[in-house]
Every structure is written in C-alpha cells, then in structure tokens.
Amino acid sequence: MEEIEDKEKEEELAEGTMSFWDHLEALRWALFRILIVMVVCLVLTFIAMPHIFDQFILAPTSSNFFVYQWIEKLSHGMMHFNPDFSVQIININVASQFMTHITTSLSLAAVLSFPYIIYEIWKFIEPALFENEIRHIRPAFVGGTLMFFIGCAIGYFLVFPFTFRFLMEYELSPSIENQINLSSYIGNFTMLILVMGIVFEMPLLAWLLSQLGILHKSFLREYKKHAVVGLLVAAAIITPSGDPFTLMLVFVPLFLLYELSILVVKE
Image (cartoon, rainbow, N blue to C red; front, side, top):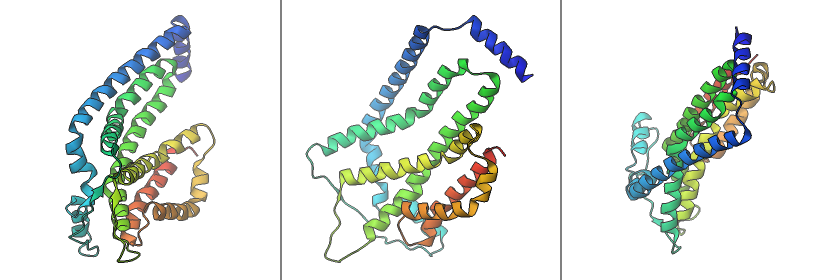
C-alpha cells in the first residue's frame, strides 16, 4: 500500500515539478511571513518588557518567588530558604539597560514565534515528502517544539532559580559583598534556560539517529548504567549546589528523557 502511495506521490511531483525559481519564490514568501510575525511579536514584547522584566525575569532574585515557597512547602521543611533573600541587580554600563531591553525583547519574540517558524518550515518541505515520510516527520516537528518549551520551563522554574540562589548565598568570606551586574544576570538566565531547552531535544535527536541507522535500542540499553553516571555528572554541572534534592530535580527529568529515547529508537 505504501509503495502505491509513494508511486502516486512521485507522479504528482513529476507533473507539478517546481523550478528552482519557484522554490526560491516560495521560500522568499515563507521568510517574509516569518519576519512579519517576528516583528509583531517584537513590538508586543518590547512594549510589555518592563512588566515582564520585573514580574518574570527578575522574579528569582527575591524570596517572594513562588517556586521557592512551593518547594519549601513540598519538602515539608527539609529545604528551608532564607526569607530575607533579595538580590539587587546593578548596571555599570551607560547603554546596558537599553540594549538589554532590545535583546531580551528579541529573544522572547523569537521564542513566541518559534511554533510559527516550525510551521512555515514544515509547509515548505511537506510537498517534497512521501506519505510515509510525512507520517514520521510531522510528529517529530510537533514533539520537538513541545519538548523545547518543556525544557525551557524546567530551566526557568527549577534549574536557574536554584543555581542562582546557591551561587548568591555561597560565601567565601563575610567581607565580600555580591553585586550582580545586569549583563551577567541576563547572560546566565538565558544560557541555563536555553541549555535545558536543547537538552530536552534528546529524544528527538535519538529518533533521528535511529532513522539514519546510527543508533539502536540495544546500544542505549547496554550502556544505560554508564548513561546514568553521565547524567548525574551533567546534573551536578548544571546545578552546582551540594543539595541532593536540587540535584535530583535536574537528574530525574534527564533520566526520564533517556528512557523516552530508548522507547522512540528502533531495535
């Protein structure tokens, strides 16, 4: 049945073959639509950025951040946070606040428009795919987008707050006062969240390598113990605190991603 469908697809492609310039024109319009959506998102995020910055980006700098309170209640007192925790972000460069306003607005606009960008990419390549390829690749596009956002959410709600708080409360000497520069804070904020978003693409990468015949289920199962050690090391690097509870908050999602990778790859 699939052979018949593929043959019909080949006939359709042969009948309506697009020239190089036709493909270029389709790509140009796709890029134009993506640009329009990104500009709209950029304008909206630029206008809303002062509120977003205070309520969202700077939220982990205060003990009022709901995640700290939620984790303390969930751990039944095993994790006790300093109720007076507060970090003052300073700026030492004349143009930093303006440039941060622009760059964070652009970054957020790119994240918000990411699903539409994936949609345009899919619509551009779909006509060249056979039916069986579409059935495999469409879930990969949707799943990869969803996993990226899940990873970013875990980075924001768990990884960055605990990493940031540990580093801020770490004291080499009582005579040293921490003064966090705006550029340093934003750099660490975006880096950790982006890293978690990329890490959550692990199942998709495993599936793609499996489709290419490079990775097999037996390999992942055979080296599972080695992977656990590697994931523990990765979790320790991402969250350099010595708190086992915080370490497990990062390790458990990574381990579940590895298990999911085993499920999606071929034998």
